[in-house]
Amino acid sequence: DREAAEGSSCPPRAEREKVVEGSAAPRGTDNVLADLGFADAEELSAKAALAVKLNDLIDKRGLSQTEAAALIGTTQPKVSQIRRYKLQNISLERLMQALVALDQHVEIVVRPGRSSRQGGARGITVVAAT
Image (tube, rainbow, N blue to C red; front, top):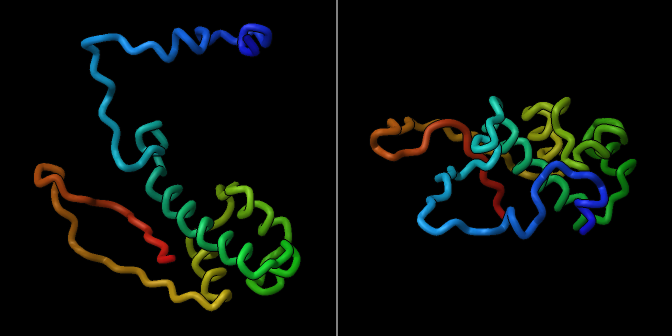
């Protein structure tokens, strides 16, 4: 087992994958980053959704990172960060500007949220049309 050879402190895969009868798995949300305890989970999810769309456009156009950087008005290292989803130092605004530079329409919609008692969504949601 590779994990045992690497000295992992985790139990072997077979033990981790066992399902204990009668035990309930913790209930997650629609945001895995929030489930993992990230304080800025909504912002990270929004950035990731925009980066996915941006990367799709770069791929569809067959652009190199240097060509993409010139089109969106940034540097090749920043494009590399976006391509690898390393988004800590890239703002939501910058990602939106990059999409606009690639002929996309970015729309921000603000509407009242429902309280958690009503089971409604609150916070930030980003949807990228295909």
